[in-house]
Image (cartoon, rainbow, N blue to C red; front, top):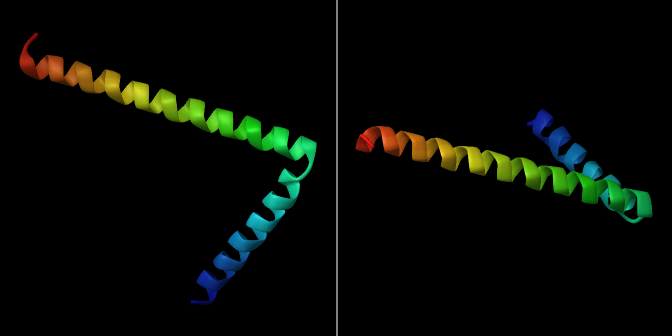
Length: 63
């Protein structure tokens, strides 16, 4: 239980620090760049999943 409390404290401190950093121009630029990279990664994973799903469906259907 003590470890969970420390985890919550760490998460709360992380949110406060991220909020303060996001108030600066360079912080906004950093988080904007981080958001773009995360979205690009998510899209790549999604595209790969759809491509692999199509390959498997094609193999099952015997095309």
